[in-house]
Image (tube, rainbow, N blue to C red; front, side):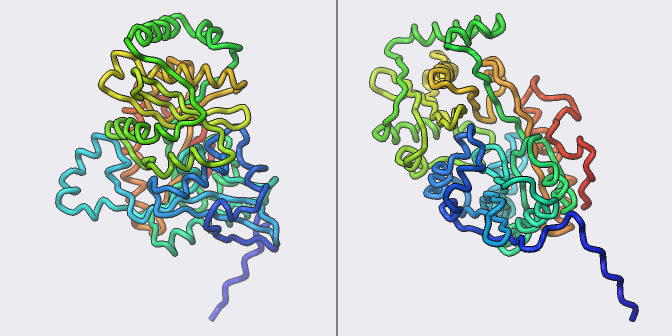
Length: 410
């Protein structure tokens, strides 16, 4: 029998000594590596926040960290979240959820999707990588994620919320491995160039500035309302959780839902810079915005509202104004907010930071179905969320196919 010729070695392949391993916890990442390579101005990449995530039950069955080593040296780490039975009706839009109602009644098991998320469950996606790695190492990392998904029977694999700043070799490796790319909901970021909150207001365009001052007046006219920014808030956590649940009951998508364990861990975790923007009606908590800080960056991570008076008192806007005031006072260069409520955040002056998903399935037939069904479904949900702020087709700079990279094969 004629033997196939041996393929020439891949010049961009991994150099000798590179290997992939799976670490069970962020605490297994060697001291100093995380702190050196995590985005220094993004509090959602604070190591203590990942510890808090691991100590709670906010969605995934468990977490893991895909690590690439060269010899004994760690050169790259990719966080993972493992969902053996993610509820599909929790992560689609309201229209799609209504269409799935009969399925949920007749056979709820069909809506349980085993899924592996790669990146940061609560923030922007990054790979913590040491220096300029050979292209083959990125292929090794992607192959490692797929191998873990197969071992854990997690058919769908998603690289979540990566931006245009993601390394080009990673995007190429994903395309070569059969991933397809979709724009995800953009992040929201407010640049803080003003020296004070009044300077920030004065720099807004005329209509947003008038609206902001009107909302502040309506809040101040409401009897008994006041805002405090708290370093210690353990006694408020039950009220915080109750207000957060009011918001989540109205949310279109619930990939992760914070619980009492996470909130307690955030409050107790040493090294995690956090403050609670707390709005009281007399002595009762009626709104909050949990703010996290790292370097010169801040994030309004999660919000809670008492809908009994949220609209009349403009609670949403005023806790955001207080967070902006706090971030300016702390010397922050930017503050980010969640991937929701784009109209008020654009009015606050936020820019939309485009992000993308890379998706695949470990089985070829299912991968072909995903490529056919998911793009229109997610595009419809994204259009509904963004409304008039939806970028024109082809304007998403983070989408690898828009950059001329090879299309994934099904």
